[in-house]
Amino acid sequence: MSDRRPNRFAPSLQALDAREVPAVILNTLADGSTEVFINDLGSGADTIVVRDFGNGTVAGQDNAISFSASNVTKIRINTEGGNDAVRYELIGSLQDGRQMSVEVGLGSNFDPTVGNDRFEAILDSGVTLGNKSNLSISADGGNGRDYLSVTAIDVNVRPDATLKTVLVGGYDDDTIAQLFRYGTNYGTVDMESYGLSGADTIRQYAEFGAASTGHTVQLAYGGDGADTANVTLIAPTTMTIDDAELFGDNGPADTYVDTFLNATPNVTVHQ
Ligand SMILES: [Ca+2]
Ligand SMILES: [Ca+2]
Ligand SMILES: [Ca+2]
Image (cartoon, helix red, strand yellow):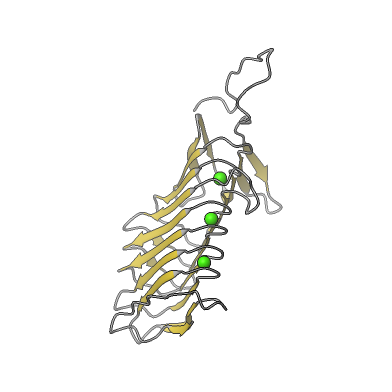
């Protein structure tokens, strides 16, 4: 592991690059667990990778800085201005009862530097969310044309476990892609996409394994602008669909292309 703080010269001239020093901060939460807080303010294009081992250990890179921490229950990433790329990957099964919250802010809606950001959350194929575990992922693109995605293929969700993903495009024309496929769900899978302003593209696809007996929520909101949204929900009858809705906005400009496979007449569309 490299030092938390890079070696830096102290130039006598004003730095032309307004970028600030990336920072990885480890905070101790009230319950004694650790929060990893990555705070990269300034207009630089940040690249952040976080790997979650599923047992509380987290490791990754914040630009040139490597970090690792244990007993982590929360990861908070704030990249603000610039074209940022953030990747979160669950590389091992989330242990029984373990909690993990991932909150990513890629920029403000009012940031004049806009920032076309990229966020990818990947749950590796074959991992399991253990009994009573909880994985919550939220990301907000803010201003700029952002790409936000969650991919979970062959991920099983055990009883009383919850996977919740909330992706928000924010201002401008964003692309949001969420995929949960083939995994068996005995717990709860809650996937939500919010395009908000701009002509957004939302693709949300959930296909649960035939043995699934859990719950799901599937929500997609285009918001203002001419959005394109596809929501597909394929769930066995043994599952409970708590809510499955696709919302446009109040404006006549919206043109929805709603693709529901024949097996999925279970998403209510509100133009
Ligand atoms: Ca940004
Ligand atoms: Ca945006
Ligand atoms: Ca929109």
